Length: 450
Image (cartoon, rainbow, N blue to C red):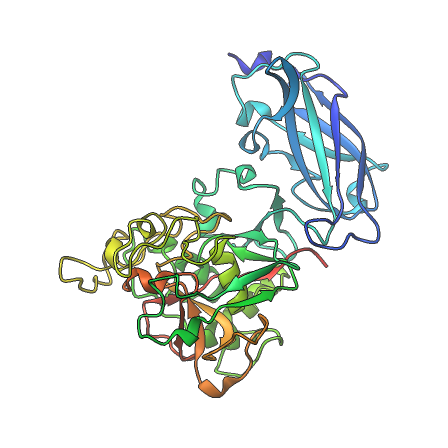
């Protein structure tokens, strides 16, 4: 069906308002969208206009059409991929001075993203959502290319709205960073593992994973992917990784990076909650974007890895089955018995191996229940905490006691067995270590805008 037949009725529009909620306190001034109109010109360009009280706010857009379900007319989204090329006062922090005479404008080209569809007059509406700055949308995309500007990040209500698709657009693993909001504020949950988890700490020392209840105090964003070699190079201008096959290295996780180079730079004790050293990876990333990027705390990391699933479960809710090779883990990540090691004698793959051995391309396996990839396996991930054997009384606070000399790493890696890839598994490395092909990281930041 030719796109010329697409008709949008003028002034049919939906109005939505998002104010705080989701575990956060509402802003003092709640953003409110009103007077939404939608029209289509002869060149098929759609224009959505709206007014908004109490700017600034993050603004997103949906286009809905009516359909018949069980004899009842309902409105339903046409899908984020059909809408994501909309431009103007949308997908970002919208300021009061973005309006002309009090009116904000969005333009959309349906012929470029939603061809061969026809909507009858009166059969579509625009839904404009204003998100309070302390309750920003679930997905944030941050530009880290040479053209990056401070506070230029885009926001989307779900992964479906990401232009090109999360796995279909290589930019999300090379020149941008995709962050997923984790609703953790005031959530009480169980950290660690019990004896029911048969595959727990193989050394027989169970204190490392002592079960305890805790409540996190803030929502946060966390990287959907581990930081890749291309992303590291964009920021830090080096190529440290062991796995260096030119055909696929860009989107494999960066490794052979120390805690110090990520956060503290020249082995300075720039201890959290102080900001990362300016010349560190995170310091440079903060300077480029204006966002308070950091490493996750150990508690944040495990909360995100579990994705609401408890003891004896992987992050997708499937059961932990085996200490060594686990068919459920095969779906979720790269580890020793799932391509990480080579041959029947499980030997270390060469530095030039393709991504079917060693580390995998970020996002090669299934996501967990909160949309995060490679939380189990691929590379260990640095956390903020210093090592402490028993954290059952820490209440989720970052351990700042450096007396052990070791930092926490989490998640397992390509050359370990399934037991070491569990959400509760705790392991260590010295913060200056930059020689291991098994350790990388992902980033976090505050949820919401200042």
